[in-house]
Length: 287
Image 1 (cartoon, rainbow, N blue to C red):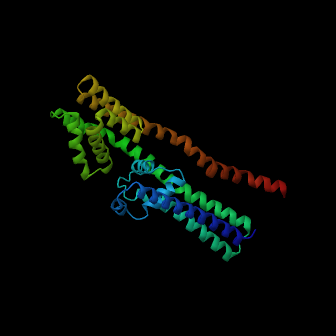
Image 2 (image 1 turned 135 degrees about the vertical axis):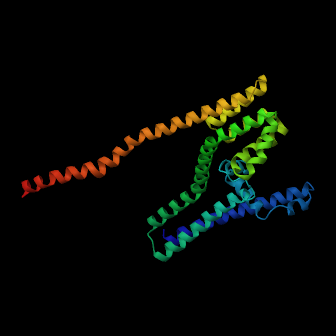
Image 3 (image 1 turned 90 degrees about the vertical axis):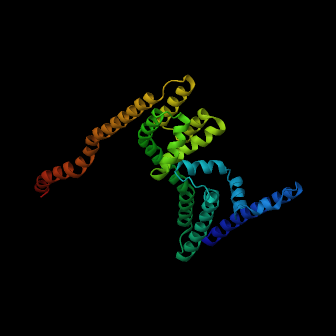
């Protein structure tokens, strides 16, 4: 099968997917009309949201999960998250068509063409998710490093006579000027605590940012709320403990440098020296 035939099959498959998506959309619109749902609500929706919803259904994705991925990665404005699936698979389709066109233009072999198509599809499908996962991992580390600073400020706020809820609300406004990540965390705790309670809000925070430091922070606040103990000295102690653990991690990484440096030392210094020493003798023997 030549490249043109493979490209035609790929285009036919994507066309069938689009037809199925369009049929599902028309079926949904008829069902909404039968239920007498106001059309004005549909007109207020952003453009192409219906296509994103269809793609979410076809590829078994959930918009809520996508929003959580964006938030975990540090993208707190979710107005572009609804287009994530649409843009992702549009890039896949356009890239597949471009590879097919270039393969025909350069007269690639069918095996090479299939390999290039497979690589493009894998990279374009897994690349965005991998980028979000990498961003989420870096954000968790950043929040863990900045958490002691937030604990110290919270302890000072509580010492002035504020409650835990009042200190969280106050700090959520103060952090807007210089740290959007901590600001988002405190704002989310403040908003969710008014709906489901402070304990549930803290539990949701740990699910969103599952690190040891956040877990210690959540457990400390929950224990203080349950037993009514004084929270200010506990926060100071927790902040100090987190800093000590971070210092130990840095010392551990510094201690591992000697072992890591031995690899390039052997490869780029010891082996060339051995070659320089033994090469003259070997050349005399061969000569």
